[in-house]
Length: 202
Image (cartoon, rainbow, N blue to C red):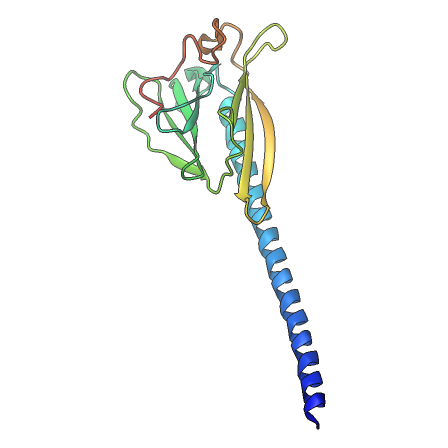
């Protein structure tokens, strides 16, 4: 075998190895992306299921807002006759951009700060930006008899473009135009008479 033949053989072998490695990396990335999409979809569906169960019986939803820490909040109240505990309860959800977490807590509607600790409902939440993300309230008015909370959630790995994004509107069936937190006379997107407000937006 001459030197030229050896170089040609080595070049062909190197090209073959490069093709094999490239294909392997592509397959691995695709598998990882598919797994991330599946996990993100499952997380999003689970979170939306929790919202549906909790908000379905709420009688008043506050306008969402941002706390001093930068976390974005929404609170709603469930009356005693619709609460599993038999007591009027408050539920709060927050999105913390700095940790990319969506968390919630529930407590009995009494004066004073809530004692319940935060429970993480979703990690790797992509911050799509804006003070209205991920919560937006549609107040009850002439066209909508009940309050509705619109939740937009994007979970996954933005770098790999692997995730799930969903938007759903949840109706508070016990709410109405007379719900305490529905009124916003000066249109500043803050409830004039908010519910469940005892030290809840750190």
